[in-house]
Length: 275
Image 1 (cartoon, rainbow, N blue to C red):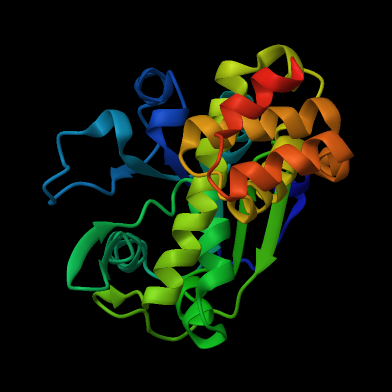
Image 2 (cartoon, rainbow, N blue to C red):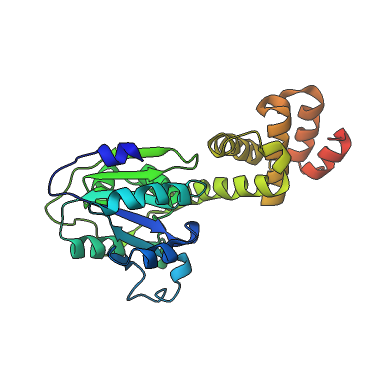
């Protein structure tokens, strides 16, 4: 967090912390200990207002609050994807309204949804699926976005602030964008399942390494017709234990051919090899 402390985007910029409360245990107690810290529940005024346990909270971190808060936030959120920092020079209430507006989106077939971009996994996926103009509009309420990624590493992205918030009052996802977001979410679910059912295999790998492997394993599993998270989890753990190229070995190639043709399940293949 020292890098964040040393950043000086502009004398008129204020640093804000957008925190997914679900991934920052003890945050409300910390706010109680530092009552001079301005903060807002971005779910306020919505149907989710009472769900503060899973709410995005926006903290204003002007000096000296910045030096008090950043080390604590870094430690509290290191093992989660719950911390996003923003430097912005726009009016604080306009920023709050803009961040609230970005929470509500419409999926194809007119299905309303909550966009949990305050989870940095969702933020990273969103930035990949938005068109360049849309991406600029989404980011334009701040001059810099900084977040902790899946590996707990600090990522930073400069943005071009706009004179007014150009993000639509209700963003509509295209079907392609929705499918890409779903695919990315599936990878994160797969990583969690790998950790739950194969901790001993996962323990020597970083979260980022597991995510990279899960991304490749999920694509390969679908090629072999392996559907459903339980079977895909088994396949991913096999990739972790045997290497991604295990499917090219003669015995596995023959078994996976049968799996693809629905002659056997992947679980049957596992039993036949004694893995």
